Image: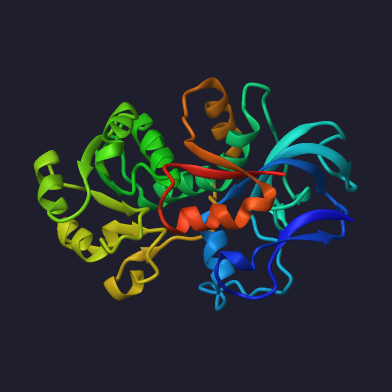
Length: 301
């Protein structure tokens, strides 16, 4: 037996409980890791609350969590890792746990902290995927809502590296940090469209909404075409004719090894806001739902 966070009914963060669970055994191609860090993602909270019950039905009890980093302690037949390897990846069966299974483990460089390794997986893949879906080319202009958030900040850096001009909406306290990432910061809130037009007189080619802050209608008006707006955070997307992007794998292959290399050599910054003991998972969810965070929250089993 081992310890994990589980929930047995949809609800508020207090449904998350520290529980004794059976230690998972790796299947073919899988590895089991002793978790050193587990990332908290917005999808975890949507699943826990029941908001995603129609698309991601729960089979209680549920161990939440999408990504983890840790040390391999058992391997399944055909797994491409060895006991003792330090790895990271998306988990099969949840990551808020002492032990987790990875279907596809990626080696963790020594230069990468456990917290950043766990924090990078889903947000890095998501940022890479949506930029590919939007198709903005070098010389184009991209507006990112929620540009200081976990996905937004990585998307900013990847877009800037591709020669794209990035405008990002942020709060006043994040202006300096976003500017340091190579984007033009615009304060969100009333009047943001006028501020974006002033910052980008050449016009905006596409809009990525990573905020879910009710900006889709104005974003469509700004670009003149709902096909040029994509959201990963606003479930009302269809009402505005906007694409909602979730979960599709990039056809060019997994970008995670390259993202890991960039994070390890310092060419990609992954914002980690705060760490919590595993037992404090409910507090982490509460803080993120109250939008107190300025980057990723990470659990440390």
